[in-house]
Image (tube, rainbow, N blue to C red; front, side, top):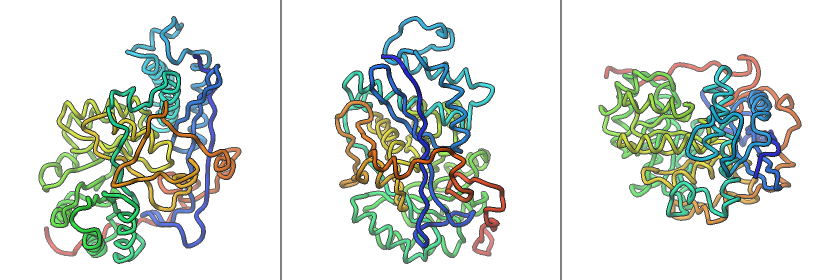
Length: 415
């Protein structure tokens, strides 16, 4: 089986008025994602997810496609680029070739994201060709993956946030994650309200949204510990490694980060300097299933766990979930619960979580089929068709499309 061609599918929707949510940069206008389909010469199609600026992803895919066309997917026949394609299996060799091919234009950011979308599609194809689900190809023994509800974003009152958390538990989730970083007063009230509603048997995680300095993070961490929070995620900017190192191990709860990291090398550095307790690679961002797997294995050797970030679409969720299900240090996978129509409609029906578990099944590959009607609803001809604005993690247009981000409002008293 050989690669015939690679296709990008850009998707977009806008939130109805009054149905959106806010980030520190203001209200979110809509959501976007890019699906990558690798077409094989036997008619099989593998799918992956690439979550970055769509025009940059498109350019990277176009740069990588000539390297891939005509290459074998499942065997190790001689290839003229074999000096770059080292590894134990063909996907790893292809990954290595793409990485070298984009070294001067990639290594992080959109090029790595595009490479990861292709990588997921190749794993999907490998599973389909071999008649096995990806979780089994990765050495797993179970088709079930723990999953948590991600949402509870600030902008609501603490009472409304707690009500949303309660509804997530009613839907079958046994872990929920909320955002903090609005102000000390709001954060404390919201965390306490959520814990009161969900009770003591549901895990609660908090995402700090890069809003803290070291002093305020220490103070907030003590409050989170008193409310039995499971992890404290991204209190600092992704590259503020010194503060992660300074905070870790001093506050009584695990630190989590990694959704904005790229490639095994990036996670190797996080682990090497002991900056984190839980790493959060995302197949749709960090370089694909291959890089999530290598990161998970390295984390295990360091006595760490991993819990992938997954925010954009169900393909990303499922890709990450296959790795979690296959590795004994995998904790859980994230499922966006902010009214994301991709999550709810791209597979024809929402991802179902029962008693906190996402069932991956035993179908070959990733085990999913995209709904053609949904693809038609959301597909845009070109990235230029997506309007300017705040689309959550991806912002299109000049800085004037955003509102000013105020500094974090602390408690107004000494540490």
